[in-house]
Image (cartoon, rainbow, N blue to C red):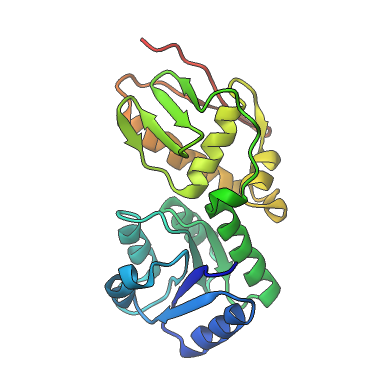
Length: 237
């Protein structure tokens, strides 16, 4: 936790003070901004490890800010909203959010979600199965376990930390079906084991990014309804 920097982007002073004080009390470095414009102006100076991003803000709303952010950064983002709208949740996840908190939320829930997101964004904190090869290849896709990077032929596949972890688990279990709850528990944490929506959105984003770079259109990730997903072996042409 030491030296991990969290930026809170929210236009409500009470929310900023409440979240900031409590995160500081458990050892995080916290910076606050009141708009997307201020976040982008100070982004390089802040260099955050995590952003808590409110949806309902004047000017650029949280969705707009997240969309712009994902064009140049993989920094983990937890969306904050006063609306319990499932469509908002899916939209945020589709844009690349890592998690979602509905106001009002308890401190225990805030701490748990912040810890879970930061845990999976830190390579040194993630336990991995031993592998005999530093990289796994199927068809045009290469997953390099050592560097935590992926390629389609010579083009790098730009994945968020969460997306990479999903694909890594599938690649380490090539041609084996991995159950929903196993992926959710390993990537998001045990408290997310029933939140299949998170996984569905993550898989959809990975599939789209792979297809955007493929020379020959093939389905790499196979869905087993009600059970899980499998990354299948494909013979390169």
